[in-house]
Length: 390
Image 1: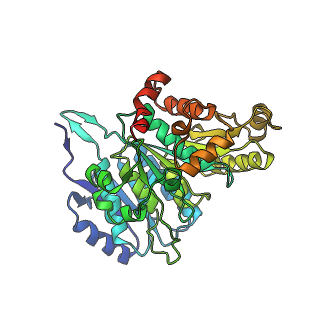
Image 2: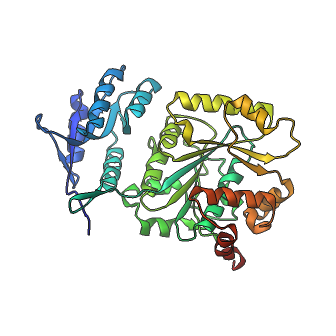
Image 3: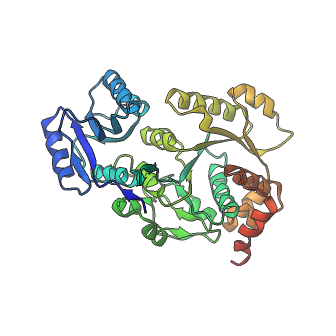
C-alpha cells in the first residue's frame, strides 16, 4: 500500500511582518506541514511568495527553481489582485493566490488541497494521484445554447462511461439554469460546498450533491448575487480542485465573463468548449475571445470551437467560419429547435426525448470521443437504459 509523505515543507518569502506572523500562526496550527527555515535546504515543497507591483523578475527566478525541482508548488500573496500581478504569477506556475489581509480559511483550504494532491510512494517508485478532468463550456455570446450543450455533454458522457463518476457544475450565479434543464429541485448550491472545503471527500460529495437519473451529480449555482463581497476569492476554483480527487470528469457551465477566477479555472481545465452559432456577430465574438484567451496564457490546444444549432444552408459555412476566427470548427451540433425546446420544457436531455435525432446522436459521438469510447450502440444500451427505468 502506498504511503503519503508525512509532512510538506513550507517556506515563507514574505516582506510584511504582519503577513509573516499571520501565516506562521496558521501553518503552525496545521498537521502535516512544517516551516522550512534552513537556507541550506535543497528543496521546499511549497513556497509562499509575497510579490509587489512588478513581479516579473522575481517570478522568472522562481519558475527556474520550480523547473529545477528546488520548489514544488508556488503560492503567492499581495496587497493587490491586479492582472499585472496575477497573470505573471499564473504563467510562472502559481497554484494559489492570497490577497492581503490574509484570510485564514483560504490558506487552510489551499494547504489542505496541496496535501491531497501530494504524490504517493510505492517503495522506490513515485505514483501520482490521478485527478479528474475539467471540461469548461463557455458561450461566445449569450443565448447560443451553452447550458444545453453542458447538460447534454454531461449526460451523454455518463452514458458512454457508466462506471465513471461525472459531475455537472453550474457557475452561472443568479442566471444558472442547469436544474431546470434536468427537472431537479434542490436548495443546495456550490456556496454550501464552499463552507465545507475541508471535507470534500467522496462520502460527503455523494451525500450532499443531487444525483440525476442519468447518473451525473449536479452542483447548482447560488440564486443570489454576492453583493456584499462575502464569497471568498477563487471559491469556484477551490471547489473544482477539491472535486477532482473524487470525480473522473467535471463539466463546468461557465459564467459569461472572463475574470481572474475564470482564467484560473480555464488554466486548470483539460478542455474548453467555445459554443457559437454561425452568425457574423457570433464569429466576431469567437475571434475576440480566442485571441484574448491566448494573450492570457490559455493554451490553444485546449480550445474546441463548437458550431451549435448548425444548419447546412447557413449563410456562413464551416470554411468561412474557420477563416473568420482563424481556427477550425471542431464539432457541430445540428439544429433541432423543436427537440431542444421540448427537452428544456420537460427538463430532459435530448437523448431521453429522441435518442435517434441528429442532435442527440451528435452529443453521443462527442461524448464518446472524450475517452475514445468504442461502439455507439454499446454505450447507448448501457447508459440510456437508466432513463427507461426512470
